[in-house]
Every structure is written in C-alpha cells, then in structure tokens.
Amino acid sequence: MPMFFDTSPPGQCIFCRLVAGEIPSARVYEDALTIAFMDIGQVNPGHVLVATKRHAATLLDITADEAAAVMQTAQRVARAVQAVFNPPGLTLLQANGREGDQTVFHFHLHVVPRHAGDGIALSWPRKDPAAEVLQGYAQRLRAALAAG
Figure 1 (cartoon, rainbow, N blue to C red):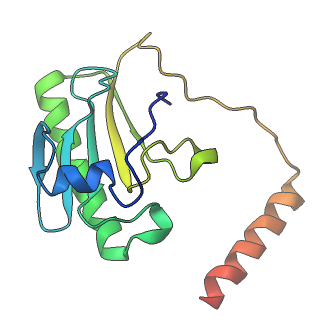
Figure 2: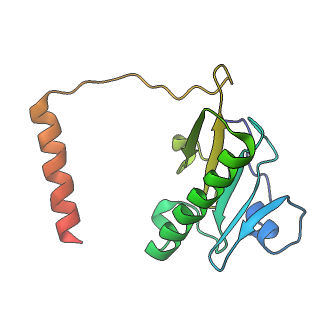
C-alpha cells in the first residue's frame, strides 16, 4: 500500500471535504451514495477511488445499500477504465483498519488498472491449515451469520 496517511485534524476527513467540494478533485462519477475520483497517488493511469459520500470509516460501518452502491459504481468505473486505458488486468482493493493497510479512514475502494511489472505486489505467506481447521472456522462463521 502507498505510504500516505490522512493527516487532517480530527473531524476534518479529507474525503468528506472532497465530497463537500471544499478541496479540488478530478471527479469521475457520482450518484446519491457514492463518488468516484482520480487517486492523486496514481499507480497506473486510470487509478480511481470509489468512496461512500457519507462518512463511514470501514466496511463494517457502511450500510448494505452503500456497500451495493460502491460495488456498482466500481464496476461501472472499471468498465470505463477498461474502455479508455485497456489494461491487461484490473485489481479492486479495499482495506480496513491500520493493520489492514487502510490509510484514509473513510470507506473507499481502489480501482487499479494493472500491467506486468507495475510494482504492485499483492502476496502473502500461505498458512495451509488442515481441512478440519478450515471446517472449524467455517462452522464458527456459519454460527455467527445465523445469530445475526
């Protein structure tokens, strides 16, 4: 992830200011729930951020309607990126919390056109737990989903 952190004072989220038109942006698209704009830290031409208009820090803080709207906007933007820049690949990236590599604490998703050797590395060490461990994880998650 890029080494950028929103250093705005508390209560002055940089994306909320962007949504309100208080700071400039290269807007791509917006609707009632979402806004899409060019990332100032372009990895590749066409790198767009899709954010909720309402301030919410993480995926766990947005509504189901906002989640659906963000994904619909991301798909719409991805189609435009494909038509304009014709990248051979595309990555959608959404991070939550400092340990999850979130750098601006306003829910957003990156739409990143990808090219061979573009310097983006999305890899992690595999843990390869045993099948019974995975079944245990799945059972715990099913119970949590059933509860609420």
